[in-house]
Length: 508
Ligand code: HXC
Image (cartoon, rainbow, N blue to C red; front, side, top):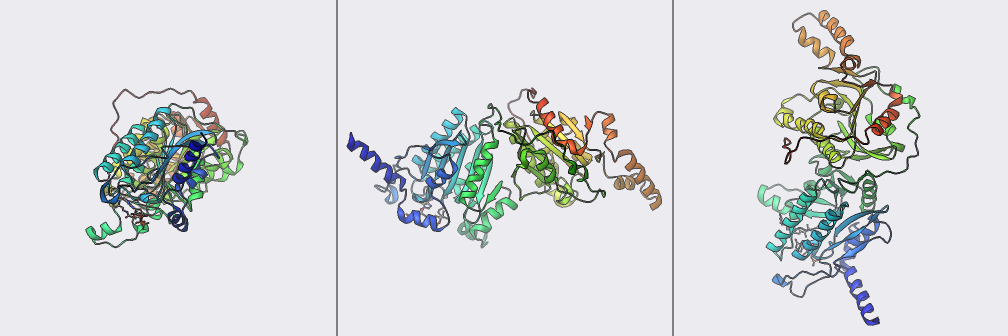
């Protein structure tokens, strides 16, 4: 018996060494942790249970016969984050560059199947060179099976990808189909084809970072939902994110202790809106003052800043927050921010996370760049997402709610459940000056100014909308947290179903 126990320990030690000391040192020298070190940071201490530690490839081509390393380039298993189960896989770059072989894919598939069957989130840590070049078609088939499972699990369990090194070729499409992608700054990059292929095909010279670094994917392509300075920070932030998410689309929202009373008034909010309606203010101040202890996990903070999206809690329960940001482009809706918010709203709806929307929107952004770029379709994505969402929807209009953008932003007309307005709200087809200029085109300046004032007096307030029931109540800004909390409490058992359909046809 003793011998077999020793053998087990020996085999485990070999497997834990992955590609060996030399490659582990190289990994550390690049500022990266190894796959197993990463899982230690991500999961509760001692909670990780590894599967398939001794799995090996069966390839014999291109000198691979006898060249096996237990685990075959990916560490898989499950553990807990603050006591809640998550399934994990972590690509091991020290083993064949983390590349995906048939055996490697089978390990991932096992974990994906278990996560879906047992209904818990799955987190993938990527640091890999794509398909195992020596294996050819077997690796391609493996990718296909991983992709199919990403799609099957979409909307059933949260799927999160963290890019912590190279992520190239076949490796990019699995993260692309998960709910969120985060990246480690400076040490990770993501692209379909690398700089060498780009040079050959398009004659462009680019670095890994310029082509697919965190700086690109968090600001330009919007592929990534956020970036962190190093492996440890990224992993700790994933723990924070998981705390906000339900385990599946049928699980209860996580509920944690709330140490901030919802009954206290925040008088500073009564002066948040500047006297001049064209002056910006920071909507994040209102978000933080509405959420428990000001804790807010922002999604895509560096992309399309004219809309803010992220998770917070009210009375200990998760909410998704969507808010126009007057500090960026006056909070206007454009293609980028519509896509960003639409995806976020749909995530919340998949997982029964109530949506709190703060509205201060002057309309849709005019111009050829927007129209040629498909503003109609992109704007429609957000409209569609809000309209199809059946989760509790609580809306607070703080200032402008103009035109189509008013309708889009979780208005009463799109089944908003509780729609509040601050006394500073202006709900109208458009701004007063623009309206007067159109209605009294060609008339002298004095007449236009007089009609601007008339339009302001008529519509630059929440009461006309209130008369029609388009806002449920005009509330004091200082009471916003309390009112939102009460509304969410009221809506806890909301039941609403869309008509049966195979699936909808959102304007992609
Ligand atoms: C097998 C690989 C590998 C791969 C890296 N390695 N990528 N082995 N298959 N795809 C091995 C290397 O041989 C090396 O082994 C070790 O991993 C580290 O690689 P390096 O090149 O030394 O590291 P680095 O300089 O950091 O470069 C990382 C890299 C580069 C940029 C990822 O390795 C690279 O370009 N790899 C190939 C990427 C690629 O073209 N993949 C195929 C994509 S096609 P040793 O023994 O020296 O440690 C694809 C199609 C799927 O994925 C489509 C599905 C739909």
